[in-house]
Image (cartoon, rainbow, N blue to C red; front, side, top):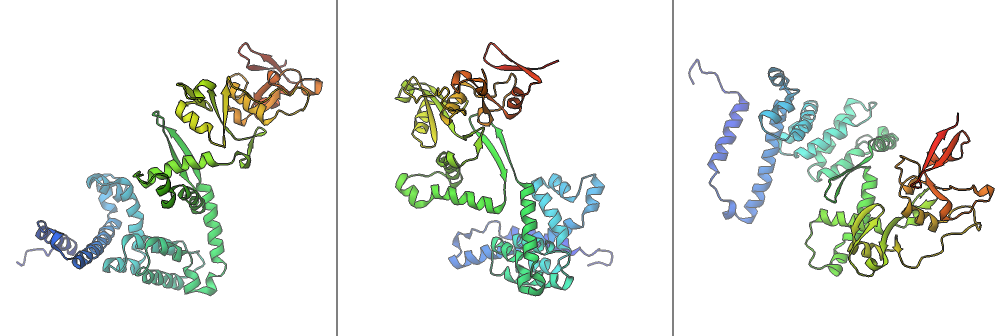
Length: 410
């Protein structure tokens, strides 16, 4: 090296060495490796990748000036743009990169190949989640213990150990803390719980749901009962659907198997799916039917009509007596089902609250004044409009289409 030549920075020396090594193996066919050599190569390469990732995150954690120079939001956004990488992945890497600088034990173990990147993320998250009253010495002991356990356990098991690490490294400190941590975690899970739906316009709907681990485990337990290998071999031995598709179909089967009698009541009646179909179509003819207010094929309607928890509303066929007159004050479940077919939404003009959320109201003469509890006198009203119907400050007018309109009295 000449006196004027600047020595290469170790980071670039490492990059050059890796590129040279990869270039030398570019034409190497691993097919000719022995089984044992392939196993060693897979483990060794995975360890090298984690070591390189640790170095990249070390640089990423100190690259705020790069983002500032180019006007990027942060180093992760800059890397995603300039490196043509996934933005979500880069965003997840940045906080881990900065956190690793505060956990040299974990960072060194990652660098040496003693644990992988996913395990490192679990370790630092577990240590960071320890309560504030845990001192630095106990935190360091917890980190060392989890790094040691990473030699035996995958990230999912290591995550469980991380939640109970205080019981091992400092039982006198951990007493009572775990319970408070679990309660805090449960409160956070409850606040973060949601379910959103978005119709795709092609007969499918995307469901995005976030629930606690406990609820997810319970749901998967139910769905796995529909997708168990023993069940599948008996029902469809040649079933080659991917597992996620099987779970989606299992979810539908689970909903159909739900007992309406054990579901919370809406407007005085258990939640029930009504399949409306004429008798000829039910018996095998062509046509369409309605599941609630959604059109479905005749074949699907015939299948649903055979399901115990689905109520078929057969038009043109025999049905039970629905008009009970003065025999009872409250509308029966059977009457409510018939009303839901005729009145799919609240009877008030402009209200689209579904019938399953509505309450049956004596729309003609009140029951207390001699009115009859029959379908001809019945209106399904949401709770808000049902209160309006009994509020003397409002007048109720019947419209030509059968709906009602409320007017405040002057």
